[in-house]
Length: 329
Image (cartoon, rainbow, N blue to C red; front, side):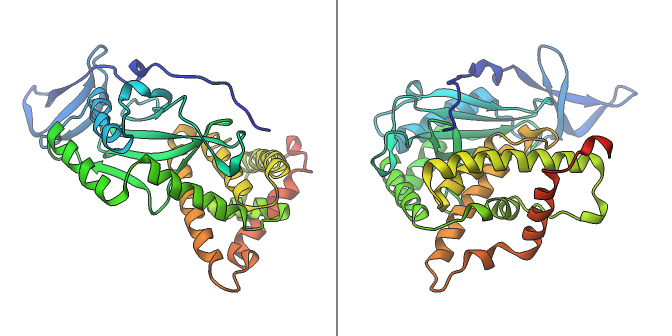
């Protein structure tokens, strides 16, 4: 059974002070139409943006999340949440904060070991890489696997082209709540999806093939260098281990497969700067969940035909690396 230590992060990691400054040429002439965002304490530049860019500090983005919590999580406030993850690259120019309710669990399938809790992901950036965005998902408590709804996800997104007022945020969230309901209705939808996944058979022999398909891993066997081989070998070692653990615990089904995928998405090995990939990887898993459920409802659905030959070939090559000594290559 996969378990991980309960660790919380200090939000102040993301709340470092930033400010806007004008840009000057080498001749000390003001460059019109642009400004720079800098880390105030060090003066380190984080980005160059247009003069129309509206700066939203990470602390302000967090405070605005209070409206999401108030409307969607009835009876809760930001004080009920803890920060269990901060994803921030070395540049510090973008940030994702995951907030979780540490004592608000729902059990799937009547099994206390399948305890899930809702979380809110806050995304923000100082370089226009990310819009100001709020997403709601559910996290498997025992292993901290982040799951975000796929195409039907709950997302509030605001660009940096204008100032966002608290009143506008309140209105935006209230309008969305009218469409999707509260955290309780989201949980019921999520619970139904997970039940459907348990009814879809997935053979252990297909784990690596599905993994390659979800993360679009296509291997050109004729042009794989030693470093790439090492990376592929580490991936297949991780997926083989996760497959053994989750399928032994949960059975040969798509719910176990989803946990393999979300575990990898949340704790990937080998990609350069993995923190930059986690959000995208987790969204890929959400889309796979929606897609596999929709396809399963089609009469005559054959999972083996859905995988694709290129991913089968990639999985076969990766399996061969398990028994290859790469130290001499």
